[in-house]
Amino acid sequence: MSKVLIIAEHDGAVLNLSTAKCVACASELPDVEINVGVFAENGEALAAEAAALAGVSQVIRVDNAANANLLAAMLAPQITALADGYSHIFGPSTTFGKDLMPRVAALLGVNQISDVMTVLGSHSFKRPTYAGNAIVTVEAPADKTVVATVRNASYRAVAADGSAAVETTSVDAELPDHTRFVELKAGKSDRPDLQTATTVVSGGRALGSAEKFEIIYKLADAMNAGVGASRAAVDAGYVPNEMQVGQTGKIIAPDLYVAIGISGAIQHLTGIKDAGTIVAINKDADAPIFEVADIGLVGDLFSIVPELEAAISQ
Amino acid sequence: MEKILVGLKRVVDSNIRVRVKSDGSGVETEGVKMSINPFDEIALEEALRIRERGDASEVIVVSIGGTETQQQLRTGLAMGADRAIQVEIDHAADPLTCARILLALVNKEDPGLVMLGKQAIDNDNNQTGQMLAALWGRPQATFASAVVIEGTAVKVTREVDMGLETIEVDLPAVVTTDLRLNEPRYVKLPDIMKAKKKPLEQIPFADLDIEVATEIKETNFEPPQERQRGVIVDDVAGLVAALKDKGLL
Image 1 (cartoon, rainbow over the protein chains, first blue to last red):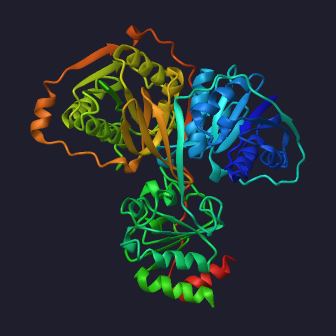
Image 2 (tube, helix red, strand yellow):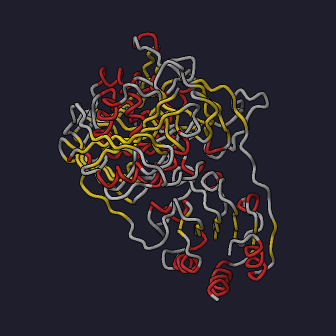
Image 3 (cartoon, each protein chain N blue to C red):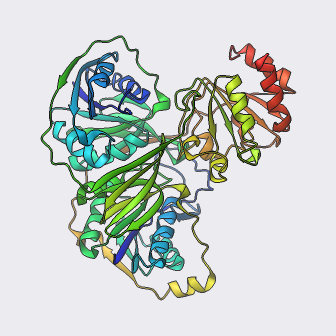
Protein backbone atom coordinates (compact mmCIF):
# COMPACT_ATOMS: atom_id res chain seq x y z
CA MET A 1 0.00 0.00 0.00
CA SER A 2 1.07 3.61 -0.61
CA LYS A 3 1.07 6.34 1.98
CA VAL A 4 1.47 9.83 0.53
CA LEU A 5 2.41 13.09 2.20
CA ILE A 6 1.35 16.09 0.11
CA ILE A 7 2.99 19.40 0.91
CA ALA A 8 0.30 22.09 0.87
CA GLU A 9 0.97 25.30 -1.02
CA HIS A 10 -0.65 28.43 0.38
CA ASP A 11 -0.25 32.17 0.88
CA GLY A 12 -0.76 32.07 4.62
CA ALA A 13 -4.52 32.58 4.29
CA VAL A 14 -5.86 30.11 1.71
CA LEU A 15 -4.62 26.99 -0.03
CA ASN A 16 -3.41 27.24 -3.59
CA LEU A 17 -5.53 25.12 -5.92
CA SER A 18 -2.34 23.16 -6.70
CA THR A 19 -2.82 21.30 -3.41
CA ALA A 20 -6.20 19.87 -4.46
CA LYS A 21 -4.62 18.90 -7.78
CA CYS A 22 -1.83 17.03 -5.98
CA VAL A 23 -4.53 15.15 -4.05
CA ALA A 24 -6.18 14.25 -7.36
CA CYS A 25 -2.88 12.85 -8.64
CA ALA A 26 -2.15 10.95 -5.43
CA SER A 27 -5.67 9.46 -5.52
CA GLU A 28 -4.61 7.57 -8.66
CA LEU A 29 -2.00 5.58 -6.74
CA PRO A 30 -3.18 2.03 -6.00
CA ASP A 31 -4.34 1.31 -2.44
CA VAL A 32 -3.43 4.76 -1.17
CA GLU A 33 -3.69 6.70 2.07
CA ILE A 34 -3.31 10.45 1.62
CA ASN A 35 -2.03 12.91 4.22
CA VAL A 36 -1.53 16.63 3.67
CA GLY A 37 1.22 18.53 5.48
CA VAL A 38 0.35 22.16 6.25
CA PHE A 39 3.42 24.15 7.20
CA ALA A 40 2.50 27.70 8.15
CA GLU A 41 2.93 30.38 10.77
CA ASN A 42 -0.63 29.73 11.93
CA GLY A 43 -2.19 26.93 9.92
CA GLU A 44 -5.56 26.57 11.62
CA ALA A 45 -7.75 27.73 8.73
CA LEU A 46 -5.43 26.18 6.13
CA ALA A 47 -5.52 22.81 7.88
CA ALA A 48 -9.32 22.95 7.99
CA GLU A 49 -9.36 23.69 4.28
CA ALA A 50 -7.00 20.77 3.57
CA ALA A 51 -9.10 18.46 5.76
CA ALA A 52 -12.06 19.07 3.47
CA LEU A 53 -10.25 17.87 0.32
CA ALA A 54 -11.86 14.65 -0.90
CA GLY A 55 -9.62 11.62 -0.45
CA VAL A 56 -7.47 13.05 2.34
CA SER A 57 -7.42 10.91 5.49
CA GLN A 58 -5.30 13.11 7.72
CA VAL A 59 -3.86 16.61 7.85
CA ILE A 60 -0.58 17.20 9.63
CA ARG A 61 -0.41 20.79 10.84
CA VAL A 62 3.00 22.22 11.70
CA ASP A 63 2.97 25.79 12.97
CA ASN A 64 6.25 27.66 13.17
CA ALA A 65 7.13 31.34 12.79
CA ALA A 66 9.85 30.17 10.36
CA ASN A 67 7.11 28.93 8.02
CA ALA A 68 5.69 32.39 7.37
CA ASN A 69 7.18 32.66 3.89
CA LEU A 70 7.54 29.02 2.81
CA LEU A 71 11.30 29.15 2.18
CA ALA A 72 12.65 25.85 0.88
CA ALA A 73 15.65 25.93 3.20
CA MET A 74 13.28 26.14 6.21
CA LEU A 75 10.66 23.66 5.03
CA ALA A 76 12.89 20.89 3.70
CA PRO A 77 14.35 19.82 7.08
CA GLN A 78 10.86 19.80 8.65
CA ILE A 79 9.43 17.67 5.83
CA THR A 80 12.37 15.30 6.02
CA ALA A 81 11.77 14.91 9.76
CA LEU A 82 8.18 13.84 9.02
CA ALA A 83 9.07 11.59 6.07
CA ASP A 84 9.34 8.35 8.02
CA GLY A 85 6.51 5.97 7.20
CA TYR A 86 5.59 7.64 3.91
CA SER A 87 6.16 5.82 0.62
CA HIS A 88 5.56 9.00 -1.40
CA ILE A 89 6.02 12.75 -0.87
CA PHE A 90 4.30 14.94 -3.44
CA GLY A 91 4.37 18.68 -4.05
CA PRO A 92 2.97 20.82 -6.85
CA SER A 93 5.01 21.63 -9.93
CA THR A 94 4.64 25.35 -9.27
CA THR A 95 7.58 27.62 -8.45
CA PHE A 96 6.91 26.74 -4.78
CA GLY A 97 7.15 22.99 -5.34
CA LYS A 98 9.94 23.18 -7.90
CA ASP A 99 12.05 25.13 -5.41
CA LEU A 100 11.27 22.93 -2.43
CA MET A 101 10.88 19.30 -3.48
CA PRO A 102 14.36 18.65 -4.91
CA ARG A 103 15.81 19.91 -1.63
CA VAL A 104 13.63 17.38 0.19
CA ALA A 105 14.61 14.62 -2.25
CA ALA A 106 18.33 15.30 -1.81
CA LEU A 107 18.03 15.24 1.99
CA LEU A 108 16.32 11.85 1.65
CA GLY A 109 19.03 10.68 -0.77
CA VAL A 110 16.73 10.06 -3.72
CA ASN A 111 16.19 11.46 -7.18
CA GLN A 112 12.96 13.29 -7.84
CA ILE A 113 10.31 12.75 -10.49
CA SER A 114 9.42 16.17 -11.91
CA ASP A 115 6.02 17.03 -13.42
CA VAL A 116 4.04 13.81 -13.00
CA MET A 117 1.28 13.85 -15.64
CA THR A 118 0.05 10.23 -15.41
CA VAL A 119 0.17 7.64 -12.63
CA LEU A 120 0.75 4.15 -14.06
CA GLY A 121 1.41 2.37 -10.77
CA SER A 122 2.79 3.01 -7.30
CA HIS A 123 6.30 3.56 -8.73
CA SER A 124 5.60 4.18 -12.40
CA PHE A 125 4.66 7.51 -13.93
CA LYS A 126 4.66 9.53 -17.12
CA ARG A 127 6.24 12.96 -17.38
CA PRO A 128 7.03 15.42 -20.20
CA THR A 129 10.60 16.23 -21.29
CA TYR A 130 12.13 18.35 -24.07
CA ALA A 131 9.50 21.09 -23.66
CA GLY A 132 6.77 18.49 -23.92
CA ASN A 133 8.05 17.07 -27.22
CA ALA A 134 8.65 13.68 -25.63
CA ILE A 135 6.67 11.90 -22.94
CA VAL A 136 8.79 9.56 -20.88
CA THR A 137 7.68 6.64 -18.74
CA VAL A 138 9.72 6.47 -15.54
CA GLU A 139 10.16 3.79 -12.88
CA ALA A 140 11.24 4.83 -9.42
CA PRO A 141 13.15 2.35 -7.25
CA ALA A 142 10.69 0.25 -5.23
CA ASP A 143 12.68 0.39 -2.00
CA LYS A 144 13.01 4.17 -1.75
CA THR A 145 10.69 7.08 -1.00
CA VAL A 146 9.15 8.50 -4.17
CA VAL A 147 9.54 12.28 -4.18
CA ALA A 148 7.64 13.92 -7.02
CA THR A 149 6.13 17.15 -8.27
CA VAL A 150 2.70 17.07 -9.88
CA ARG A 151 2.02 18.80 -13.19
CA ASN A 152 -0.97 20.99 -12.36
CA ALA A 153 -2.43 21.13 -15.85
CA SER A 154 -2.84 17.34 -15.92
CA TYR A 155 -5.25 17.18 -12.98
CA ARG A 156 -8.55 18.66 -11.90
CA ALA A 157 -8.85 19.73 -8.28
CA VAL A 158 -10.66 17.25 -6.04
CA ALA A 159 -13.93 18.35 -4.43
CA ALA A 160 -13.99 19.95 -0.98
CA ASP A 161 -16.53 17.63 0.61
CA GLY A 162 -14.28 15.52 2.84
CA SER A 163 -13.65 15.66 6.56
CA ALA A 164 -10.20 14.42 7.52
CA ALA A 165 -8.75 14.60 11.00
CA VAL A 166 -6.22 17.33 11.78
CA GLU A 167 -3.21 16.48 13.88
CA THR A 168 -1.20 19.40 15.18
CA THR A 169 2.41 18.51 15.72
CA SER A 170 5.79 20.07 16.20
CA VAL A 171 8.84 18.91 14.34
CA ASP A 172 12.26 18.40 15.78
CA ALA A 173 14.43 19.87 13.05
CA GLU A 174 17.26 22.34 13.16
CA LEU A 175 16.35 25.31 10.98
CA PRO A 176 19.01 27.44 9.29
CA ASP A 177 19.38 31.21 9.65
CA HIS A 178 21.23 31.65 6.34
CA THR A 179 18.10 32.44 4.30
CA ARG A 180 15.95 35.53 4.87
CA PHE A 181 12.75 36.64 3.17
CA VAL A 182 12.88 40.29 2.09
CA GLU A 183 9.72 40.99 0.09
CA LEU A 184 7.19 39.72 -2.40
CA LYS A 185 6.03 42.03 -5.16
CA ALA A 186 2.83 40.39 -6.27
CA GLY A 187 0.96 41.53 -9.31
CA LYS A 188 -2.33 43.03 -8.16
CA SER A 189 -5.25 42.01 -10.27
CA ASP A 190 -8.97 41.52 -9.84
CA ARG A 191 -8.99 39.24 -12.84
CA PRO A 192 -9.26 35.45 -12.57
CA ASP A 193 -5.97 33.79 -11.67
CA LEU A 194 -4.03 32.73 -14.77
CA GLN A 195 -3.42 29.21 -13.46
CA THR A 196 -7.03 28.44 -12.55
CA ALA A 197 -9.11 30.59 -14.91
CA THR A 198 -11.50 28.70 -17.19
CA THR A 199 -10.79 31.22 -19.95
CA VAL A 200 -7.39 32.78 -20.63
CA VAL A 201 -6.59 35.52 -23.14
CA SER A 202 -2.89 35.90 -24.00
CA GLY A 203 -0.98 38.49 -25.96
CA GLY A 204 2.34 38.25 -27.77
CA ARG A 205 5.07 40.37 -29.27
CA ALA A 206 2.73 41.68 -31.98
CA LEU A 207 1.00 43.87 -29.39
CA GLY A 208 4.03 46.14 -29.67
CA SER A 209 3.95 47.94 -26.32
CA ALA A 210 2.59 47.89 -22.77
CA GLU A 211 0.04 50.56 -23.76
CA LYS A 212 -1.23 48.58 -26.71
CA PHE A 213 -1.45 45.46 -24.53
CA GLU A 214 -4.44 47.20 -22.89
CA ILE A 215 -6.75 45.82 -25.57
CA ILE A 216 -5.92 42.30 -24.30
CA TYR A 217 -7.02 43.27 -20.78
CA LYS A 218 -10.23 44.79 -22.14
CA LEU A 219 -11.10 41.66 -24.09
CA ALA A 220 -10.22 39.50 -21.07
CA ASP A 221 -12.55 41.55 -18.87
CA ALA A 222 -15.37 41.16 -21.37
CA MET A 223 -14.81 37.39 -21.25
CA ASN A 224 -14.15 37.19 -17.48
CA ALA A 225 -10.78 35.70 -18.39
CA GLY A 226 -7.32 35.50 -16.89
CA VAL A 227 -4.53 37.19 -18.84
CA GLY A 228 -1.32 35.56 -20.03
CA ALA A 229 1.50 36.42 -22.38
CA SER A 230 4.21 34.87 -24.50
CA ARG A 231 7.82 35.04 -23.42
CA ALA A 232 8.47 37.63 -26.13
CA ALA A 233 5.86 39.97 -24.63
CA VAL A 234 7.34 39.55 -21.14
CA ASP A 235 10.93 39.98 -22.35
CA ALA A 236 9.88 43.16 -24.17
CA GLY A 237 8.46 44.50 -20.90
CA TYR A 238 4.82 44.74 -22.00
CA VAL A 239 3.71 42.69 -18.97
CA PRO A 240 5.28 41.29 -15.76
CA ASN A 241 6.98 37.88 -15.54
CA GLU A 242 4.19 36.12 -13.67
CA MET A 243 2.05 36.31 -16.81
CA GLN A 244 4.38 34.16 -18.93
CA VAL A 245 2.84 30.99 -20.32
CA GLY A 246 5.11 28.22 -21.59
CA GLN A 247 7.93 25.78 -20.87
CA THR A 248 9.61 28.07 -18.38
CA GLY A 249 6.54 30.01 -17.34
CA LYS A 250 3.13 28.69 -16.40
CA ILE A 251 1.65 25.49 -17.78
CA ILE A 252 -2.10 26.01 -17.94
CA ALA A 253 -5.21 24.09 -18.97
CA PRO A 254 -8.17 26.48 -19.34
CA ASP A 255 -11.34 25.44 -21.16
CA LEU A 256 -10.70 28.25 -23.63
CA TYR A 257 -7.36 29.79 -24.58
CA VAL A 258 -7.24 32.79 -26.89
CA ALA A 259 -3.77 33.48 -28.33
CA ILE A 260 -3.48 36.94 -29.82
CA GLY A 261 -0.46 38.04 -31.80
CA ILE A 262 1.44 34.95 -30.61
CA SER A 263 3.34 33.05 -33.29
CA GLY A 264 3.44 29.82 -31.28
CA ALA A 265 7.02 28.79 -30.51
CA ILE A 266 7.19 25.21 -29.17
CA GLN A 267 8.17 26.61 -25.78
CA HIS A 268 4.85 28.49 -25.69
CA LEU A 269 2.77 25.62 -27.08
CA THR A 270 3.97 23.30 -24.33
CA GLY A 271 2.26 25.62 -21.85
CA ILE A 272 -1.18 25.35 -23.48
CA LYS A 273 -1.31 21.77 -24.76
CA ASP A 274 -4.02 20.77 -22.32
CA ALA A 275 -6.34 23.67 -23.06
CA GLY A 276 -9.85 22.63 -24.09
CA THR A 277 -10.21 24.93 -27.10
CA ILE A 278 -7.45 27.08 -28.56
CA VAL A 279 -8.32 30.19 -30.56
CA ALA A 280 -5.56 31.93 -32.51
CA ILE A 281 -5.69 35.45 -33.90
CA ASN A 282 -2.64 36.35 -35.95
CA LYS A 283 -1.89 38.27 -39.12
CA ASP A 284 0.54 35.60 -40.36
CA ALA A 285 -1.46 32.70 -41.80
CA ASP A 286 1.66 30.52 -41.63
CA ALA A 287 2.28 31.07 -37.89
CA PRO A 288 2.79 27.73 -36.07
CA ILE A 289 0.01 28.64 -33.61
CA PHE A 290 -2.52 27.79 -36.34
CA GLU A 291 -1.26 24.17 -36.40
CA VAL A 292 -2.67 23.62 -32.92
CA ALA A 293 -5.56 26.09 -32.92
CA ASP A 294 -9.11 24.73 -32.99
CA ILE A 295 -10.36 28.03 -34.35
CA GLY A 296 -8.13 30.43 -36.28
CA LEU A 297 -8.72 33.94 -37.51
CA VAL A 298 -6.13 35.54 -39.78
CA GLY A 299 -5.98 39.31 -39.68
CA ASP A 300 -4.93 42.49 -37.92
CA LEU A 301 -5.37 42.02 -34.19
CA PHE A 302 -5.80 45.76 -33.65
CA SER A 303 -9.04 45.71 -35.57
CA ILE A 304 -10.17 42.18 -34.64
CA VAL A 305 -9.73 42.40 -30.86
CA PRO A 306 -11.89 45.54 -30.29
CA GLU A 307 -14.51 44.12 -32.64
CA LEU A 308 -14.52 40.81 -30.75
CA GLU A 309 -14.75 42.63 -27.44
CA ALA A 310 -17.72 44.64 -28.68
CA ALA A 311 -19.43 41.52 -30.01
CA ILE A 312 -18.99 39.67 -26.70
CA SER A 313 -20.01 42.65 -24.56
CA GLN A 314 -23.32 42.96 -26.38
CA MET B 1 34.65 36.28 -2.86
CA GLU B 2 37.35 34.47 -4.69
CA LYS B 3 35.68 31.91 -6.92
CA ILE B 4 32.38 31.33 -8.68
CA LEU B 5 31.65 27.83 -9.97
CA VAL B 6 29.30 27.65 -12.96
CA GLY B 7 27.74 24.47 -14.33
CA LEU B 8 27.38 24.11 -18.10
CA LYS B 9 25.28 21.27 -19.46
CA ARG B 10 25.53 20.14 -23.07
CA VAL B 11 22.00 19.87 -24.46
CA VAL B 12 20.17 19.67 -27.78
CA ASP B 13 20.01 23.25 -29.10
CA SER B 14 16.82 25.10 -28.14
CA ASN B 15 15.91 25.72 -31.78
CA ILE B 16 15.78 22.01 -32.59
CA ARG B 17 12.43 20.30 -32.48
CA VAL B 18 13.39 16.93 -31.06
CA ARG B 19 11.91 13.70 -32.38
CA VAL B 20 11.28 10.57 -30.40
CA LYS B 21 13.07 7.48 -31.77
CA SER B 22 10.67 4.98 -33.31
CA ASP B 23 11.75 2.25 -30.85
CA GLY B 24 10.90 4.46 -27.86
CA SER B 25 14.43 4.30 -26.46
CA GLY B 26 14.97 8.03 -26.38
CA VAL B 27 15.07 11.05 -28.66
CA GLU B 28 17.14 11.51 -31.83
CA THR B 29 20.42 13.23 -30.98
CA GLU B 30 22.48 11.91 -33.90
CA GLY B 31 23.70 14.81 -36.02
CA VAL B 32 21.66 17.28 -33.99
CA LYS B 33 23.14 20.65 -33.05
CA MET B 34 24.25 20.73 -29.41
CA SER B 35 24.71 23.85 -27.27
CA ILE B 36 25.19 25.07 -23.75
CA ASN B 37 21.88 24.84 -21.89
CA PRO B 38 20.54 28.42 -22.33
CA PHE B 39 19.87 28.86 -18.61
CA ASP B 40 23.47 27.83 -17.85
CA GLU B 41 24.71 30.38 -20.37
CA ILE B 42 22.79 33.03 -18.40
CA ALA B 43 24.40 31.71 -15.18
CA LEU B 44 27.86 32.07 -16.73
CA GLU B 45 27.10 35.58 -18.03
CA GLU B 46 26.02 36.64 -14.53
CA ALA B 47 29.16 35.12 -12.97
CA LEU B 48 31.32 37.01 -15.48
CA ARG B 49 29.53 40.28 -14.67
CA ILE B 50 30.04 39.70 -10.94
CA ARG B 51 33.75 39.16 -11.59
CA GLU B 52 33.91 42.23 -13.84
CA ARG B 53 32.34 44.32 -11.08
CA GLY B 54 35.15 43.16 -8.79
CA ASP B 55 32.97 41.01 -6.52
CA ALA B 56 34.79 37.80 -7.52
CA SER B 57 38.22 37.03 -8.93
CA GLU B 58 37.82 33.75 -10.79
CA VAL B 59 35.06 32.03 -12.76
CA ILE B 60 35.34 28.26 -13.20
CA VAL B 61 33.07 26.41 -15.63
CA VAL B 62 32.23 22.76 -15.01
CA SER B 63 30.65 20.16 -17.23
CA ILE B 64 29.81 16.53 -16.55
CA GLY B 65 30.01 14.16 -19.49
CA GLY B 66 32.15 12.73 -22.28
CA THR B 67 34.87 14.42 -24.37
CA GLU B 68 32.18 16.15 -26.46
CA THR B 69 31.28 18.39 -23.48
CA GLN B 70 34.66 20.09 -23.96
CA GLN B 71 33.05 22.01 -26.84
CA GLN B 72 30.68 23.68 -24.42
CA LEU B 73 33.47 24.27 -21.90
CA ARG B 74 35.58 25.92 -24.63
CA THR B 75 32.63 28.15 -25.49
CA GLY B 76 32.38 29.03 -21.80
CA LEU B 77 36.08 29.87 -21.73
CA ALA B 78 35.63 31.99 -24.87
CA MET B 79 32.81 33.88 -23.14
CA GLY B 80 35.32 34.73 -20.43
CA ALA B 81 35.58 31.97 -17.84
CA ASP B 82 39.10 31.61 -16.42
CA ARG B 83 39.35 27.83 -16.42
CA ALA B 84 37.31 24.71 -16.97
CA ILE B 85 36.76 21.33 -15.36
CA GLN B 86 35.34 18.34 -17.20
CA VAL B 87 34.16 15.51 -14.97
CA GLU B 88 34.53 12.53 -17.28
CA ILE B 89 31.61 10.17 -17.14
CA ASP B 90 30.47 7.85 -19.90
CA HIS B 91 26.75 7.83 -19.14
CA ALA B 92 24.12 10.49 -18.53
CA ALA B 93 24.25 11.38 -14.84
CA ASP B 94 21.00 11.83 -12.88
CA PRO B 95 20.42 15.10 -10.97
CA LEU B 96 21.35 13.70 -7.54
CA THR B 97 24.61 12.22 -8.86
CA CYS B 98 25.34 15.56 -10.58
CA ALA B 99 24.71 17.34 -7.28
CA ARG B 100 27.12 14.94 -5.54
CA ILE B 101 29.73 15.58 -8.25
CA LEU B 102 29.31 19.34 -7.89
CA LEU B 103 29.58 19.01 -4.11
CA ALA B 104 32.90 17.18 -4.53
CA LEU B 105 34.14 20.06 -6.70
CA VAL B 106 32.80 22.60 -4.19
CA ASN B 107 34.80 20.88 -1.46
CA LYS B 108 37.89 21.01 -3.67
CA GLU B 109 37.54 24.59 -4.95
CA ASP B 110 35.72 26.29 -2.06
CA PRO B 111 33.71 28.76 -4.20
CA GLY B 112 31.71 31.64 -2.71
CA LEU B 113 28.91 31.06 -5.18
CA VAL B 114 27.73 28.23 -7.40
CA MET B 115 25.60 29.33 -10.34
CA LEU B 116 23.52 26.96 -12.43
CA GLY B 117 20.64 27.29 -14.86
CA LYS B 118 17.28 26.71 -13.20
CA GLN B 119 16.62 23.75 -15.46
CA ALA B 120 18.13 21.99 -18.43
CA ILE B 121 15.96 22.23 -21.51
CA ASP B 122 16.41 18.54 -22.35
CA ASN B 123 15.00 16.68 -19.35
CA ASP B 124 13.36 19.79 -17.82
CA ASN B 125 14.06 18.42 -14.33
CA ASN B 126 14.81 21.63 -12.43
CA GLN B 127 16.52 19.82 -9.54
CA THR B 128 20.31 19.92 -9.51
CA GLY B 129 20.85 23.35 -7.93
CA GLN B 130 18.40 22.71 -5.10
CA MET B 131 19.94 19.28 -4.49
CA LEU B 132 23.46 20.69 -4.34
CA ALA B 133 22.32 23.32 -1.84
CA ALA B 134 20.71 20.61 0.32
CA LEU B 135 23.77 18.32 0.30
CA TRP B 136 26.08 21.27 0.93
CA GLY B 137 23.84 22.54 3.76
CA ARG B 138 23.84 25.98 2.21
CA PRO B 139 21.16 28.44 0.96
CA GLN B 140 19.52 28.24 -2.44
CA ALA B 141 18.12 31.14 -4.42
CA THR B 142 16.34 29.66 -7.43
CA PHE B 143 14.85 31.23 -10.58
CA ALA B 144 16.91 34.43 -10.19
CA SER B 145 16.08 37.54 -12.20
CA ALA B 146 18.40 39.85 -10.25
CA VAL B 147 21.54 39.05 -8.26
CA VAL B 148 23.23 41.65 -6.04
CA ILE B 149 26.27 40.76 -3.97
CA GLU B 150 26.19 42.59 -0.62
CA GLY B 151 29.36 41.73 1.30
CA THR B 152 28.97 38.27 2.79
CA ALA B 153 25.42 37.85 1.49
CA VAL B 154 23.65 37.96 -1.85
CA LYS B 155 20.26 39.49 -2.49
CA VAL B 156 18.36 37.59 -5.15
CA THR B 157 15.08 38.50 -6.82
CA ARG B 158 13.23 35.37 -7.88
CA GLU B 159 10.60 34.90 -10.59
CA VAL B 160 7.80 33.10 -8.77
CA ASP B 161 4.18 32.36 -9.72
CA MET B 162 2.93 35.27 -7.62
CA GLY B 163 5.35 37.83 -9.04
CA LEU B 164 8.84 38.75 -7.85
CA GLU B 165 10.16 37.52 -4.51
CA THR B 166 13.36 38.87 -3.02
CA ILE B 167 15.38 36.86 -0.53
CA GLU B 168 18.74 37.46 1.08
CA VAL B 169 21.05 34.51 1.60
CA ASP B 170 24.45 34.19 3.22
CA LEU B 171 27.43 33.15 1.11
CA PRO B 172 28.45 30.59 0.09
CA ALA B 173 25.21 29.78 -1.71
CA VAL B 174 23.70 28.23 -4.81
CA VAL B 175 21.90 30.52 -7.27
CA THR B 176 19.91 29.15 -10.20
CA THR B 177 19.09 31.50 -13.03
CA ASP B 178 15.93 32.38 -14.91
CA LEU B 179 15.57 33.80 -18.41
CA ARG B 180 15.44 37.49 -17.71
CA LEU B 181 18.52 37.79 -15.51
CA ASN B 182 20.68 38.98 -18.40
CA GLU B 183 21.44 38.57 -22.07
CA PRO B 184 24.58 36.47 -22.56
CA ARG B 185 27.36 38.09 -24.58
CA TYR B 186 28.34 36.94 -28.03
CA VAL B 187 31.65 35.19 -28.38
CA LYS B 188 34.17 36.91 -30.64
CA LEU B 189 36.70 35.08 -32.80
CA PRO B 190 39.82 36.28 -30.90
CA ASP B 191 38.19 35.04 -27.69
CA ILE B 192 37.78 31.59 -29.23
CA MET B 193 41.50 31.57 -30.04
CA LYS B 194 42.38 32.71 -26.52
CA ALA B 195 40.06 30.08 -25.01
CA LYS B 196 42.14 27.32 -26.56
CA LYS B 197 45.02 28.26 -24.29
CA LYS B 198 43.00 28.43 -21.08
CA PRO B 199 43.32 25.48 -18.68
CA LEU B 200 40.82 22.62 -19.01
CA GLU B 201 41.21 20.00 -16.31
CA GLN B 202 39.79 16.51 -16.75
CA ILE B 203 38.74 14.61 -13.65
CA PRO B 204 37.63 10.99 -14.08
CA PHE B 205 34.33 10.40 -12.26
CA ALA B 206 35.88 7.42 -10.45
CA ASP B 207 38.50 9.70 -8.85
CA LEU B 208 35.80 11.65 -7.01
CA ASP B 209 34.77 8.58 -5.02
CA ILE B 210 31.05 9.29 -5.29
CA GLU B 211 28.21 6.90 -4.75
CA VAL B 212 26.01 6.84 -7.85
CA ALA B 213 22.43 7.63 -6.85
CA THR B 214 19.65 5.16 -7.48
CA GLU B 215 18.29 6.20 -10.80
CA ILE B 216 14.75 6.89 -11.88
CA LYS B 217 14.67 4.53 -14.87
CA GLU B 218 13.38 5.93 -18.15
CA THR B 219 11.70 2.92 -19.71
CA ASN B 220 9.93 4.39 -22.74
CA PHE B 221 9.73 7.59 -24.78
CA GLU B 222 6.70 8.48 -26.86
CA PRO B 223 5.66 11.54 -28.84
CA PRO B 224 3.00 13.71 -27.20
CA GLN B 225 -0.59 13.57 -28.35
CA GLU B 226 -0.74 16.09 -31.16
CA ARG B 227 -3.53 18.58 -31.35
CA GLN B 228 -5.34 18.66 -34.68
CA ARG B 229 -5.40 21.74 -36.86
CA GLY B 230 -8.91 23.17 -36.60
CA VAL B 231 -10.97 25.51 -38.72
CA ILE B 232 -10.12 28.96 -40.01
CA VAL B 233 -12.98 31.42 -39.74
CA ASP B 234 -13.32 34.48 -41.98
CA ASP B 235 -14.20 37.19 -39.52
CA VAL B 236 -15.18 38.08 -35.98
CA ALA B 237 -18.78 37.02 -36.59
CA GLY B 238 -17.52 33.59 -37.65
CA LEU B 239 -15.34 33.36 -34.54
CA VAL B 240 -18.19 34.31 -32.22
CA ALA B 241 -20.47 31.76 -33.93
CA ALA B 242 -17.83 29.02 -33.60
CA LEU B 243 -17.35 29.79 -29.90
CA LYS B 244 -21.11 29.77 -29.31
CA ASP B 245 -21.31 26.41 -31.11
CA LYS B 246 -18.87 24.97 -28.60
CA GLY B 247 -20.77 26.51 -25.70
CA LEU B 248 -17.80 28.73 -24.85
CA LEU B 249 -19.66 32.03 -25.13
